[in-house]
Length: 134
Image 1: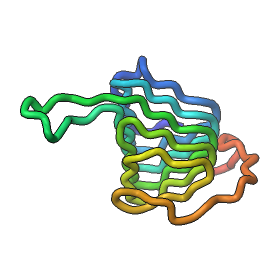
Image 2: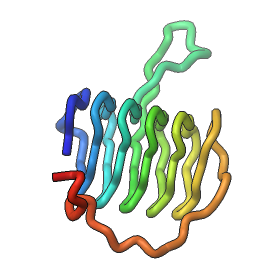
Image 3: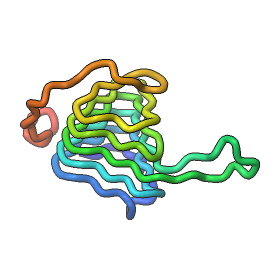
């Protein structure tokens, strides 16, 4: 499901099967953005592949690919910055700002995000199978 999603440069965005991307999200494809299967991205979340170099006298853009692997859950109002890979089954909690790679099954939160827990590796669901997604 994709409801009121702001997609920038869609030609560089790849989205896997059974994903749920909620309203008011931003998917930035100015550099490659890859989203795996069964990924749930909650409303008001932002995934950026480009930002500005704050130390540049010219405010130079800096771009880098973002990869979100299978079974990742990104909760509401999270922000993912350029160059980040979020490992399989990881969880990004509400309001987190992810500036560095997240290992598989890690639960991260905070600004900037850090590991606050670990998820069990028992994911077998398909998001499209849930009655509330139909």
